[in-house]
Image (cartoon, rainbow, N blue to C red; front, side):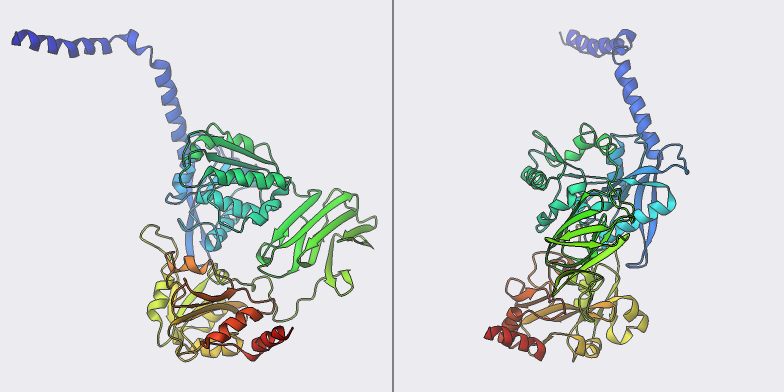
Length: 552
């Protein structure tokens, strides 16, 4: 019996082997196998067209990489469409490019994915890297300027929303995928009036709830933005798989060309850094306060404009199909009609008599493009961390932007105050630790500083930004600005601040924070709070402003 059982067991694999050799069986699988093999070869060909190239960054004198796909048989006399794809957290630029190409092996357009320093989001230095990459691509290859598209997934999706809404006239169309966004962006939704948007999300996304993209579509539609939304039932935080494949994202992009001269431009901004959209430019505003313009051609050489919190703007009309220099120009601003000689570029500013033709005067010492704050802008470009007789440990900790989870491709100098050169002062923002007793540069710039922490205020932390010459200076006196922060590394906390912040003990106990006024002066309510602590010295000008406001 035992021998019979053994023989029976051995006969089973023998029969299976003969069945595997039966051609009639294999022919059933040949079409699928061939298709799979051809798909594999197609992907290999696509990957062969990938390159990793670099551009030089003046932020830290480094060469920063990006992954780029070039069409097969590239014709250098032909201008190609370009897709910029912002990678999600915890993957690289190379992986992001492969995610697109595995579903679109021969897209016939240029696709570029910046490293953007790693997983740090797409503000500040990372945002600058995207535009530096874009400029580098245009230097290397011919790009169709009217067919540049922007997408990204997760944190990259949030980054695509931010870049798309702050500079909408750069892009032909925008597609955020399961976008992880930050608060405060909602006010910018109307900026996409002339920018088609396609949102994707998985219904069961446990990281970024689908309700976020639903709400964004609702915001867009309320602002008359062309906004489509695709939500995948049961899908989790991997909506990009479907978007790149079933969603036909590349085909959707191909429908659109940038509208260089739309009839209507609606634009909101809080900063001179983002001061232009299409044929409208902001000339004078209050940084930190949303300034709004809605300008439209109602017919040839007739423009109607409404504004909010805006004191000066310019219309760049040359090239608009509804504008001609051969006829008078009529501009109605907030209900006031002006009839003018037509010029390609014409400016207006708010005066005591209302809106007046001309460039707005910006007095010396007032916030202006490149010098407007907040503190985060000082670390968005080249900067040096400087310590004096104390503060070396804090300076070195602040300069370490990486964390165990995310190794960021960025490096900054740390110097003692006595080692800072004239070239450093001319070419870098300075992050100064200490006070006028312990740091020679704080003492040197004392007359330019609106605040000073008393050396005896050991349990307080003060941080603020001011312009010195054409550069920013950030002063951190007392406790380091990240004391008690729920974010790591230290620069993450700094990105959330306004122009100044005073806290006691830790960031859980903020005494005063906010933005300086246009003239870099402390608002009266913050001056009052700081003076009452006895820990901060506020110049007499600010104390007078406080006293004046208290009597009104």
